[in-house]
Picture 1 (tube, rainbow, N blue to C red):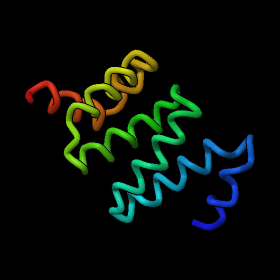
Picture 2 (picture 1 turned 60 degrees about the vertical axis):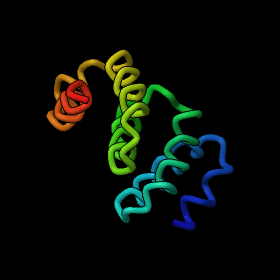
Picture 3 (picture 1 turned 30 degrees about the vertical axis):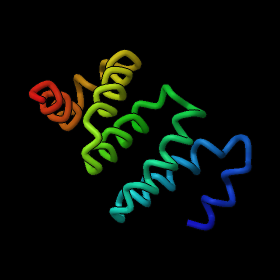
Picture 4 (picture 1 turned 90 degrees about the vertical axis):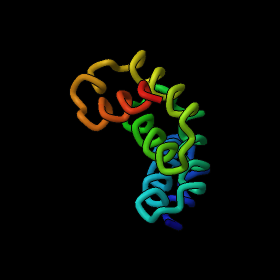
Length: 99
């Protein structure tokens, strides 16, 4: 974790390290911290489909359904192939549509 924290201030590695920290915190069920780092990464790179899927998973864990709709819509606009080729993304989107 400290390794990635040290990279946050490096211009070329900031978005990458923020995304990695978000993944680590998500995998360890620290969803609020994962959201914090994921959103910082998203502010630096709002076209990364993998990051958007991570944010969707974080919001699902936190039951933040309106935010999921926003990110899922952005994901579909950014890269529809991710939605088409990712069964998990389709299940999440279909679950949202039921709400």
